[in-house]
Amino acid sequence: MNLPVPNGSPVATVGTTVSFQTEDSKRYAAAAYSQGDYATALTQLEAAVASSPNDPEARNNLGQLFVRQGRAAEALPHFDEAVRLDGQRWAYRFNRARAFGLLNRWTDAIADYRAAATMFPGDHATLYNLGLALLRVRDYPGAIVALEDAVAAAPEEHDFLITLGTAYVGAAQSDRARVTFERFLEVAPNDTEAPRVKALLEALAAAAATP
Image 1 (cartoon, rainbow, N blue to C red):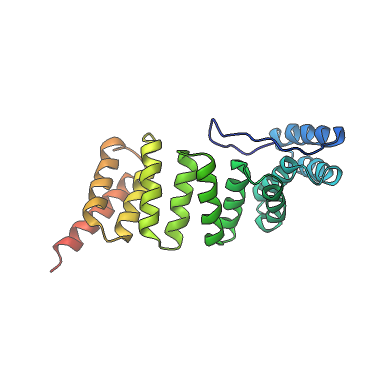
Image 2 (cartoon, helix red, strand yellow; image 1 turned 45 degrees about the vertical axis):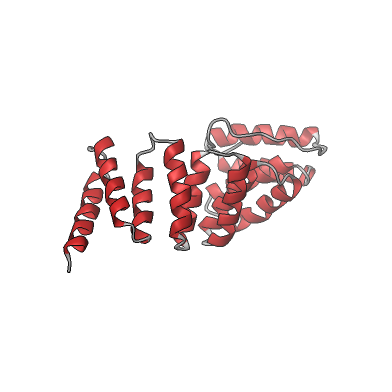
């Protein structure tokens, strides 16, 4: 049972012994989760962790379910353990970073997103979320680098341009912000965000005209 992750995410294996009971519990949990039965999924995943506490996948999946239920603080110990058991798995770092972000622990989130980015280079979701986290701590130069890479990796994700333009504004790079917002309007003129982007462009123009 995994929350959606980008296609092609790397999979690592770890040399741990997992009981048949654990594997059965994970399968039952996945089936329950797919049907929206989160209570049963939770029971099964807790059973999987209890029977094989050193199974990083069970830990990660239980953490994801807690996040899905708005219980990020309870998810963290399981993500911590998953990372301890298999520190080179992209998904575990990415998922823990997301939990850190939900708890406004942005410095920790940035560290995990950076680690995830080294494990899955060029992944637009990782780069974009890293950029968002850097924006939260007002590291505009760092956010620009991550967001430019995200836009290059997924040019079809037009909303990325809005976030990149916002980072340029924060870095006082008004000309680059204007070009980026105009690019968004060119590629997605009918997007629901178009009125907001036009307002941002008008604000930039007004600021430039102010003596």
